[in-house]
Image (tube, rainbow, N blue to C red; front, side, top):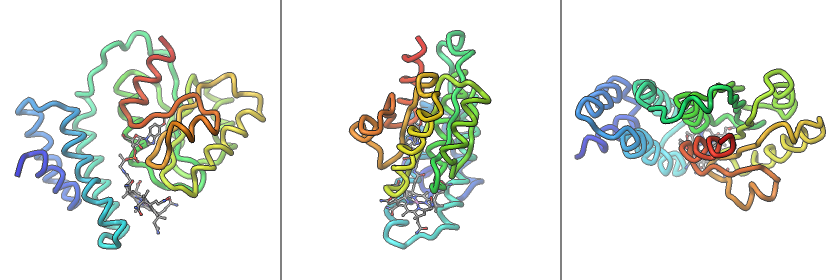
Length: 212
Ligand code: B1M
């Protein structure tokens, strides 16, 4: 079994000690950080997903896996290099998972990648109401709003959020980026978001392009 597979397996098992040890040993051996994230840490969630769907894994076990993944990401955070920090120092990003939705692993990953690229990120957490996004725009005057949704039932809360931002007269003050497993480019267009982000790296790259 490769070290990446061992790391994925440790995430799946929620074995924090092994996740930290294998992540560190991959770093020490010079492995590519993107590969450690994608093949190792997120590879673990790829094992979790079908088992959770099939009812073979339950919420506490999934949360343990998520926690283990987070511990691995924390070790990698200082290594997520910044290629062009100067241009982004003033760019603020308000991010949150929309109302009714408690999934935050993807959002946290996006936050980590953005912070590592010198964006100032204000994370509103999960189950964030449209009004809280509106209030955050008024308070922080961000360049970007990031909306995350993982459930087909909460996708429409993205639309509600964008409508609330428009109704508050703030739509032209922010770029709205959306992401999450059920989200697509078509859906982003339908709800008049400014961009769809397939993953955390895409979110960073799109935001960088928008402020260039
Ligand atoms: Co949930 N869950 N879950 N869950 N869960 C899904 C989403 C599901 C597809 C599993 C399944 O049945 N196949 C299914 C949704 C089905 C549907 O809607 N059609 C589901 C369900 C049904 C539920 C519950 C209803 C289960 C229940 O209680 N009966 C419940 C809902 C709770 C709620 O939110 N109200 C629930 C609960 C949970 C847990 C609490 C156990 C846990 C969440 C823990 C946590 O987040 N702290 C959980 C998990 C872990 C999952 C799966 C297994 C994994 C999600 C994940 O973290 N993926 C998931 C199955 C799946 O997605 N295949 C599932 C890894 C993560 C890195 O990827 O979030 O896609 P992702 O993020 C990516 C991109 O999408 C993008 O970048 C990220 C990194 O590259 N991205 C953005 C995401 N947000 C972005 C925002 C941006 C930009 C990019 O803004 C700029």
